[in-house]
Length: 457
Length: 180
Image 1 (cartoon, chains in turn orange, brown):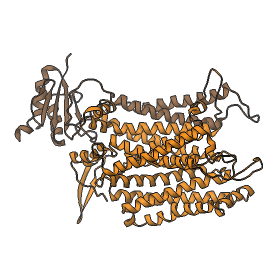
Image 2 (cartoon, helix red, strand yellow):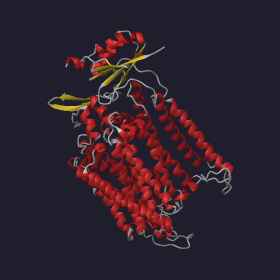
Image 3 (cartoon, one colour):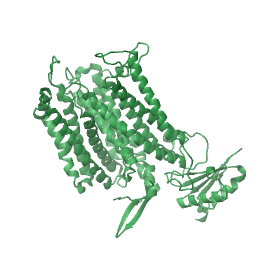
Image 4 (cartoon, chains in turn yellow, brown):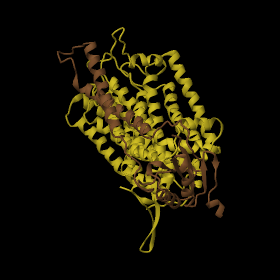
């Protein structure tokens, strides 16, 4: 059911440009609060760079810790953004209009934040370019393309480039609108970004085709990226990592956490920018239904991963799985994953009245991401914390305050960047909302009056 | 030959469609005028479609370039620094496929965006009649014609109750605002 409010063009422009021209008190609170955490993040990274990786909990054989867990988490969050946007555009789903821009922006900032982590994790970030791109004709230095650590940057850079271009292409008409309504430095910025857009028929036709074409191209990249991230683990010989199910399992997990993050973002935008006319209850209802299917799919793969570790009865796999399921602290993580990742949110989403309650959707989406962060930790760490025949020492991993600060800072960084974006660019696509208004109609069906959208196939 | 521009500004879709019809009745070809709006309308709303394009060629070219670059990087790297592992063939196909796939998709994505910009004639740095009311929801009909037909274009645009009619010399006034 469409619960569209009938707003004029001017009202739509005014409301969707509101964050650009006014800063509500909560936004200032957000800037200051997130900025403070971000300052701690910068201090923690600087401290680690100055003193070296010894200030973290990393030591042999625990060479991958919180930063790599967080890298996988943010890659996962980044996935659903463009996926939702691309699928909704390809299927011409009407409820895409208020969701796509925020989802695409979240993808880009999450990806950028994710990419920071392996760079920081190296301990010498300034040398990362030298390591990642060592194509050096002069000294004959070449990376070994047979290792997943080369596949990973190639996939993520493809996804980041594609997502940024995707976002920018759909942003151009709104830049023209902003250009025509601003003065000073903003006018100069929007004039440059609008590229001289005039809104003729040819430009609109290209814009529409671009939406389909880029969606079709970005979807396979989206699937490939988290598959390749999963191979960082799966092509190793570490027990419980070395699993063929990892690629689809990581992809579905990414969708579960990412779509939930989109719900979180929708609720925040509705509250902060008063976008009730655009981000409506029907949108939460629709995305809640999607999440039931995605969450249940993720649960299936989660159980499969446990099953595949147990079924072959290999001693090393069994040992790690026993460690994961029954020993402190991973038994708590197991409970967190089940409870927050599935058994609290999904039964709630089954009921429409809960799906149409923004507060409940907000808190259940947060719960999913608590569970999904725990899941990434649960997947990555236990396999490294055991002694094997080829390791001469082993130890527990205890994250240091520096790593905890970096994790907190990563959340602040994404939040801060989203706030900055919404101060400069409209967080909902204005031209797509207006396109929806052009085609909206009221139909009388029996005794009911139904909002409908005329759509060209 | 000098070309003159005339821009009619219309408050609603019906008036803009009527203006397009009036222009055609006055003998203007479809290629002589374009419709400016702040959101897309279905193709054919203002008459026949607005010309062919080659956008679909761009991702194919980009994909081919990306594939070639992926092949060059992966194959070239292994051949330039031969590391024989366990007596296996030097060129390891599965990881090559991964990077070539990403290269192919990256090329296709970049060239699609370049194609969109090229086919949309962006960035546009030339001068053309424009009015900021278009992004506010009005519909503009921009006629490009010979100087001797400028007055014919103005009278055709005025038949459809425009909010305003602009020429390179400035506003010549619309009939909608006069009627009010």
